[in-house]
Length: 222
Length: 288
Image 1 (cartoon, rainbow over the protein chains, first blue to last red):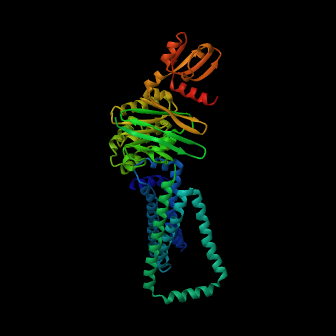
Image 2: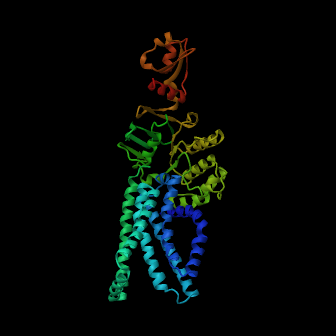
Image 3: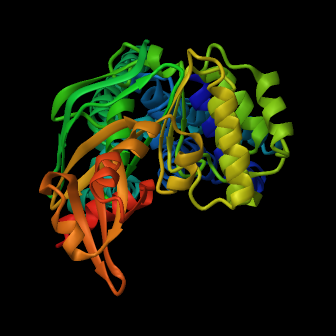
């Protein structure tokens, strides 16, 4: 699997180095100067999508066809894409937290590192991995183009859902109810329960998705 | 003699095409050339052997194991009609990747091949010519010291000089008699030069079958091109005549048993049939 991962890295690096300035410098700079942590919180999501890009690159150069002739199991070939998604979103999270640290250092009291960066970053990272758990089997079965289209639909549905919720339910009432509910739960209890639940949800989704992708990839005639 | 590849009644059926009953062997120490018209199923046969497609019926063994078995694939080098690496990768990176893929990958041997083929280690693939890409594929296929090479149109589109170099390389490879090569090619001249045996996949309608697998020398004894008039041709038994083309000078016929034909028609010219001619005459018979 390490060989497959290294191959993905070599292929992606050429693409990544063109936007490393944007991701590594411009986004963190804007996040800090404009007090908009979400620009840094996008990092795990943006980087996780590179595992889809690696499948697109494989399709373009017909690597998948060649990979079948190598002594590498289907599980390892598919697993490398999942590992890439986990690693890249992890790197995105680290970069996001580093940006948050710098933000707090440069402009103390404007943001809360734990709330605005750490917890939000972990949630974004989990969301990125859940998204990949949905998209990777689609990319293996139908191709990356269809997976990307689905991603757009997912995003539209998510934000459209939030928008509709905000329109249908009076905001002040919803916020008050939510605050009351959250206040009634002990912080430590909520963090532990939420954390464990989140990890189980993400790990379970990734495992199920990986199994499905292995089945799809093994049955694919190239 | 050990068979590196062995298929028995191998069938692969698609909606619009089927490959039927392929019995193919690649004995150790031989180069077997797989020939056939476009769409005759050469690539399908190779893909089935490598486990890339599942056979509908029949069985295939690759180095005594099931197709796609990683332990068998570890001893096989594969070259397709192009190098299927990402365009931005270079030979040095391919070396590092393959060192993690093959347990017996020999980096120094790979670098030796690259030097021998005059391939730069740092130049990305997108800057390589087609010949260089094929040489890189070959270096990659050989650097883990495989016992079996499977080549799918590996020499097509290459200039005669590069083709010659690569064919010499195959002949070197086969010096070790435990090695073997199965190569599909449209360029029958390459097979005339390198192959010990020839297997001919012939398509009739939507169905392809393996018409024969023979030693190259036996083929030369079995087939001939008879040039004679219609009256002389009529004297031959029908079973010997495969297909006749009429031209301004008389008839050209692909015949079996050329020695017996020569004895029967001493005045007629019966030359050795090339692989191209055998294919052309068989294809002509079906399109009649």
